[in-house]
View (cartoon, rainbow over the protein chains, first blue to last red):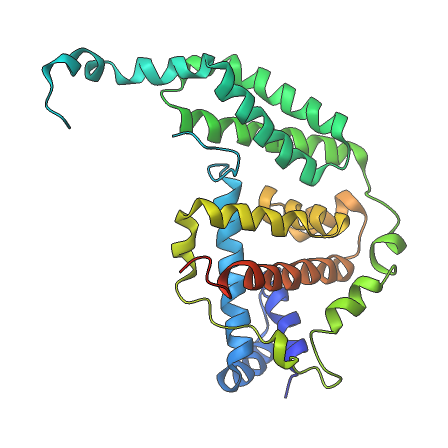
Length: 66
Length: 211
């Protein structure tokens, strides 16, 4: 069984490369049981989407117009 | 919306009005400042960052007339800026010695403290549910917090994270640019993500700010 720390590493790695079958199974076995890691995993998806939004350059904090 | 007949003329020429705003000095200064902020996050050299912004703006101006509105112009200017930044990073070849990036390791310890010895989350550091997180994307205040969190990343983490997630380079490209091994890069990206998760949770999703 993976620890939470190992799970977070694996979740981050999954944004860099496809996980292999074994990794996927281990990850899923853990997140089924652990809500904290489940939350972490979904927050990583949010982070990536937020970065994509941010990269469009439309949400600049100094932009008070429009 | 008002139905006033006086407005017919202005309604008839909306695109001309939009395009002329590109000659609005105040708007352009604001845009320039935004671009400098972005460039500074990735290039640790204010002069180079400023040059990149300048070149991007000049390049964009040459074709400004073909843009109907501000947001199209802005998106496009930022795309040019990204390319300038990539050029600069390429020329620079490497960020720093690998040992400086990785082995200088208070950072690792600080993040490991999120977990106990067995690698379980410490009770106070357990990530909570962010509900419907993308709803926050519509709030201006969220992006203030988001940018604060990005600015709080340690310099080298910020750089590789921005190369990866903002410019959109893949692992191989970044490793080539900054002379890191894949596993070192992954460690840095991992740490950046842990920090950002923690920061967003503390400053936004965990609090009342977005309620």
